[in-house]
Length: 152
Image (cartoon, rainbow, N blue to C red):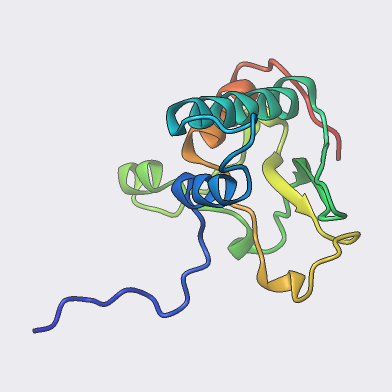
């Protein structure tokens, strides 16, 4: 049996790819830094950006007309069962289907949202933004402890 092969189209870029591009551009400049320093700068920048988005309800305007990144608050729709997610722990415990109602947030859902209406990219509907697990957990912690509220 053959092991699974890599995807033919690999669109994800890692820090190593970004550093290689940076090194090609600034190879002999005064701006050239080693890989360890480069990673520290990227991590600290990303942390500050997500601190502003999560703690201060800021909206990040992406460069080159790539849209905006923010936390979006939406009211839950109880008319359609498929719109609610199932609480599997309580469903198993009581033997009937029980849904998450988000009582701790007054029946609102929150998510990271990339506003692409003003985006300048071709085929923008094919692109998506997925926040890291760490940032999703930080958002959940903020919501459960009523630290910050976000706008609709």
